Length: 115
Length: 113
Image 1: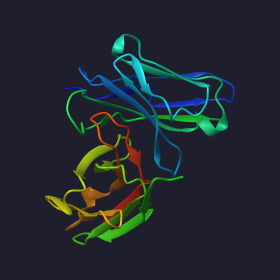
Image 2: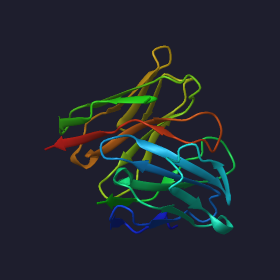
Image 3: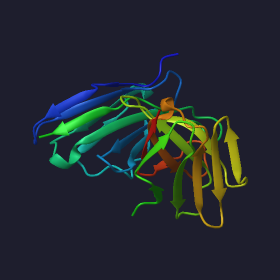
Image 4: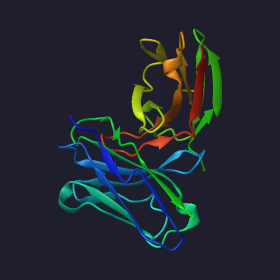
């Protein structure tokens, strides 16, 4: 069974540019999460989709970040325009919807560097 | 403010030794405490988890100790091996099957031969 995949693995952009990160969750997982780890700090929650609906977007830093999950399958996270403080590793995770304490499966992350 | 505090930031242990990582939380609404293991180039992967109705959970060489009154929990790795070298994150989440996970800052463990 394929795990969570993310693309690209690395992205280097200049301040003011736009970047779009993609996440493909495990097939059949209705929950999809985005997290971010800034160097040396904790992994922080950004937002959570249930199928195509945003369940919780309380962790989104500001309106330069836009997440979508069209059709309830893959998700994209767009940063426009990027700022220096957006640098970090962006993780996507997915889990099943039913049941309690469902394990979240993480992708390998996208390392974003804003110069 | 950081809801889950983790220490130490890094840890070097000799092969065969015991690795201990400590965490503390503030929010008493948390009721699920997983530990994640992350190897370079990979995402975090669930290692072991505990709920506060038990004080200890053991899986192989990995043990979680939980102190509900002190709001602290720790991971013990017995007979540490070089293959255990990774970054470990403690975490916490609230009731419900789809709650977000709140992570600690991570501990980079190096097990030397």
